[in-house]
Structures are given as structure tokens and as C-alpha cells.
Amino acid sequence: MKSMKSASLTHIVIRVCYVLLAVSVILFPILMRAQDGDRFYFVMIAQHGRYLIYPFYAVVPAGYAALICLDKILVNIKKNIVFDKSNVALLKKITLCCIFAFSVGIASYIIIALIYKSIETVILLAFGEAFMALVVRVVSDVMQKAIEIKEDNDLVV
Image (tube, rainbow, N blue to C red; front, side):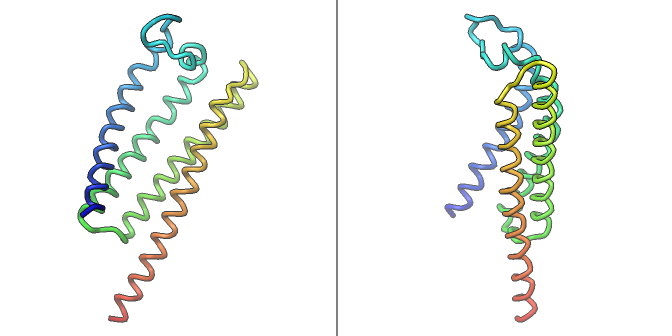
């Protein structure tokens, strides 16, 4: 019962992330024009937004794809479909989304560093995305192994 509450809460968070990502897509250019002292002035966006806007928009589709995959996994969990090949496939798609975001982050950092100036935040985000890709890949491999064990046990019975 507790795991279902956790899955439901996570499902709500994922749905909120859909909205937040859409809002950030709309607000990014507006926040770039904010002046010091404005209510919604964010130093990182106002000062470096012109460097970050293109990489951000490049990874938004991957972000939505990852959210959709997470959404589907949570729907499966609520239906008690846990150790299933479809969940492994979804986890692998999330891994690819993270690798794509990492690649965009690294390429962006190199371009920004060569043309403009170095923004360390971009490289930190890229490595965070790479780490998430590794974590999701490990979970995917564990789930794949669990499916194999489950199938072997089903054959025995």
C-alpha cells in the first residue's frame, strides 16, 4: 500500500514536471531580458541566457521523452506490471535521453568556452546528466536480470 502511495506521489510530481518544463520553455526568453532589480531577475539566466538558450531548447524534447517514459513506467507499476520487458525498454530510452542531454551539454560547454567564455554550470549539468544515464542504465540492467530470473522461475513451476 505504501509503495502505491509513493508511486502515486511520484506520478503527480512527473505531471507537475510536464507543466514546469512547458512554462520554462515559454519563460526562458522573457527571463533573459530581465534587468537587475526586476522581480524575476535570475543572474544565471540574465547574464548567460544567450549562451544557454539553444542548448536548453535542444534538450527539451529529450526531457519530455524521459518524462513520458517515467509516466508509462509509473502507470505499469500501478497496474503491478513491474518486472516487464516494456519497463526495461522505457528505462533504456530514458538512458538515451540522458546521454543525448549529456552530449548537448558537453558540446555546448566546448562551444561556449571557445567562442565566448567558460560557464562551469553547463559542464556540471552535463556530468549530472551523464551520471543519471549511468544510474538509469544500472536500474535497467537489474530489472532485466530480475525478469530473466522470474521467467526461469515461471518455467520451473
